[in-house]
Length: 263
Image (cartoon, rainbow, N blue to C red):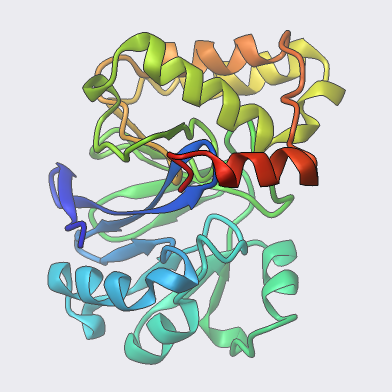
């Protein structure tokens, strides 16, 4: 079972992955900020629930958790929110009004346990003031990333993800060629709308995150970038000029599953 690892002072990543048939593995990452008012960021996928709860509460006691930041409602990010809210009586769920509406299609969440943050909003969590910043690419209209200026870590939701044969903790564990192949595939497939948006708009959104000059970018679906976060943002800008990824038909899918190395 993958174990959580420290990426910055009092800041941890809880890693998991899911198979992408015929392609490799897609990382699924959550985070914990164990500061004055501890915060959980996403909760992995539903299939990872037992692992997530075990790892998260090795890092912080449930009753100490004050905030649960949900980047968006997709099940690979919100797989344990109900369990976290039940186990953490002092925690409030951070989402947007749109995100809350989507969550309420499945969950009953007491309004007094919700804290709404829109893009650009700030929140004082005791020993730092964090900011909700939407990443350049996303697959849910309710998506927000989180900027922590104390550690200079940006949590990017789905953006900056990648897919490879094996999951890795850090981007520099892969060659540039290996990394970019999975990066450009994932960020086109998962954010399929990119082809309908003007290049300068995606470029401006990428430059907004680049201007943070962060030490680390933690993607919800890829290894942590610790060497060159500016290059990560420049790669996003390159996607604007790329063609969409061809996705398999049923016949092609069956061929993929028959391959000797199929997941």
